[in-house]
Image (cartoon, rainbow, N blue to C red; front, side, top):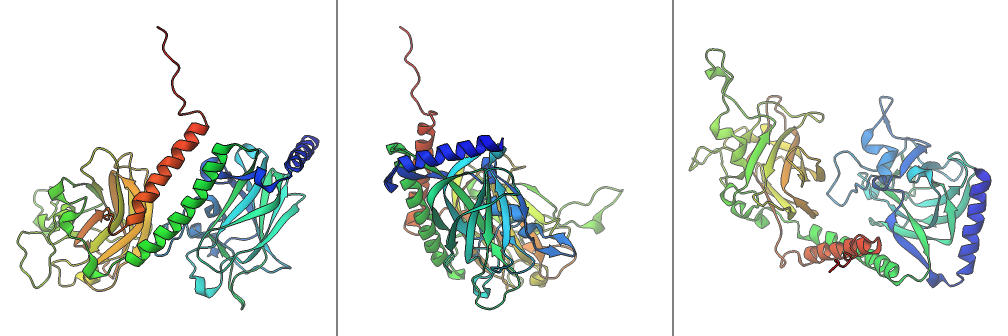
Length: 449
């Protein structure tokens, strides 16, 4: 096996040398080490621990799960990879990756996303690293194929190898962090590997070029979106929410609803209090302790306290039969309860599904609400949804239940978000181009007369 791989490596290098012009070497568009593409993380020098156990939000596997920290948007279960100690040139930290079915690939570039849940200012993000490859075993021997430096900027960064190289296993070796002073640990967001495509396939070039431009457009659109994230005065009308009950939106499930346990008679189960039903979250009425409501709608109150492992939740269904694109949500913590903020939601998460009310769920972000009653707008990259799930992971003090006034989701107008639609259209074009290249969109054979 080793001799066969060495021979394959020699043939690949001969092929590379035959293409003397750099223009003939194109970096592919697919991250071949991504978990979704069969990639695996085999081992690492270190992982962050808590009470002797690996912290799942900082596992090495998070490097290839495709979940990214983007500004205030933090995936609930994936902050990136973190170590127990900082790296150095003499004692670097490393992670070993394998491709699907341990097959070798001719690689031409890697991309590093330094962003993690560690704030950039404390200097734990990756700085200097090298890429090593092995064509034999996941334990080496290792050959260094490039050393690089990540700039101190919160954006994914691409690094092209000087010469494409055949690799069966890839090792990311980090030798320093961004912090000039000693830091407690190293953290890295995502690591990606891309193939070197040899030839002059014009369609491949178009796909790669479009993918690169789309990446830049996504980053710019995200930056614009962060700038547009509004305060209370910018909250859209709850009646305009795509989940509003007046528009056909509905609550299809909830973890619990407040009950009047004292009214139970004859052993019957206590009934949910109408004024605290989950459906009140989308009725468009905002309650306040000092204002008599028009209808008995105080907001939603659970019948149990949320925890990190067992959050309280509500699942909503959009009124359309096809997925709808959303890119913002609004939450209002005001309720009828005068002690509302002691019982108000603190940490929340928004998730979507296009398959069913039982998921699978895609997390759009996690936020901490202010300890004062009022509305807030939450922004996230555009996502398709037929069902929306609101998870509440903690409250501001109550050990009995949690409360929330209103909740809505929106697709911002082109005037507010001119780039969102462009990004989606480019993604659709790119997806179809790839399908066409793979033969999936070839026209059907002509029918016989």
